[in-house]
Image (cartoon, rainbow, N blue to C red):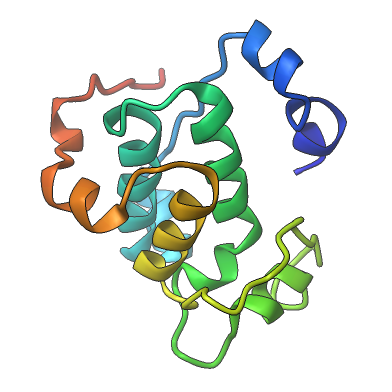
Length: 141
């Protein structure tokens, strides 16, 4: 989040670099966060690689999703406002979103909200066509 606040919120700087974000779903990560981690990663990968967006659109969308990450595995007890405040975050980091009246605090709700705020892409359409299995996989080692 700090990288965004200091550098990546500047469209000129963001347009001048080649940014990518890799998502990990190894056994240890899944054990820590649960199987929902794979669904969260899929949505991020769809936005980053399958939506045909310029990084000045997909990064603010991804940043929005990170800011609302407490919603991404929500059991119904958290609202978007609570998630955004950082009160549900281990590090109490807050995001930068406002006007969350149309935000549904769920994985699909947050993906839809963030896409609609920063792009013209509709999550319901992208979700149906996104196939992240086509993306190259990186291995560590």
